[in-house]
Amino acid sequence: MKVLAINSSSRGKDGYTSFLLNKIATGAITAGAEFETIELSKLKINRCIACSKCQTAEHYKQCIFDGKDDALEVINKIEEADVLILASPIYVFNVSALLKIILERYYSKGASDKLEVTRSGLMFHDVSEKLKGKKFLGLLVSNNMEHATTEAAEIFFRNFALFMDLDHLGTIKRSSGKLIGYGKEPEKEALYPLIKDVYKELESIGRQIVTGKVRKSSIRKASRLIIPVPFLRQLMKFSFFKRKMVKVAAKRYID
Ligand SMILES: Cc1cc2nc3c(=O)[nH]c(=O)nc-3n(C[C@H](O)[C@H](O)[C@H](O)COP(=O)(O)O)c2cc1C
Image (cartoon, rainbow, N blue to C red; front, side, top):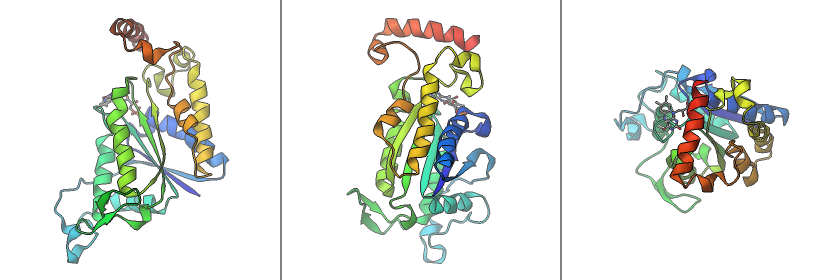
C-alpha cells in the first residue's frame, strides 16, 4: 500500500504541517505502508494559465508545461498512490496557494467538454480515471482555533472529494500551532498535555489508513482543542471569555 502526502506549507519540513504529517507517517509505516511526502515548496510548479491547449486534439490532456516543471511528476505520483493525503496550512482562511496551483494543473488531465455524473451524483466533466475511488485524507493546520478559520478549506476538501470521486476518509483540523511552539518547544507543549493524545491519535490514523478506513471518532480526537477548559466551544460564544483567552495566549506567544 502506497501512501502519498502532499505538504503545501511554504515552510516545508520546518513547519508544523510537516511535523504532524510525520506522526501519521509513523503510524502508517508501522502498519506496513510505504509512505512518501512531497514538499511542494521545494518544487517548480507553474500556475495554470488557462490556455486550454490541454483540451485541443493536438495537445489532448497534456499541459504545455508538462516536462518543463515538476507538476507532471507530482500528478503521476498522486495517480500511483493508494491513499492521498492533502496537507495544507491555513493561509488567509483557506488552503495554501501552493496546493491550489497543483490541483489547478490537474485540470489538464480531464476533458472539460465531456460531461458525466459522478458516483456521488454530481454533474461534472471527465476527470482522470486513476483518481476515482482513491482514498483521501485532508489535514488542515492553523493557528487560530475559531471554527470559521478552517471552514472554507474543509468544505473545499469535501467538494473536491465529491467531484473527483475520491473516497474521503475525513479531514483533520489542527489549530493552535503557534501556541504550542509548532512541535519544537517542549516547555510550551507541557502547558497543554492534551496535545500528547492528539499526536497519539494521529499515529493511530496513520495505522488506520492502511486498512482503508478511519474512524470518525479518531478524526474528531485528532482535531480536538488542546486548551484544558471544559465546555470551551460553548464558552467561546461569549466575547468577554474570548478576550480573557486572548490575554493569556498573547503572553504565551511572547514568552
Ligand atoms: C500568508 C499566511 C497566512 C496565514 N493565514 C492564517 C489564517 O488565516 N488563519 C490562521 O489561523 N493562521 C494563518 N496563518 C498561520 C499558519 O496557518 C500557521 O503558521 C501554520 O502553522 C502554517 O503551517 P506550517 O507551520 O506548516 O508552515 C497564516 C500564515 C501565513 C504565512
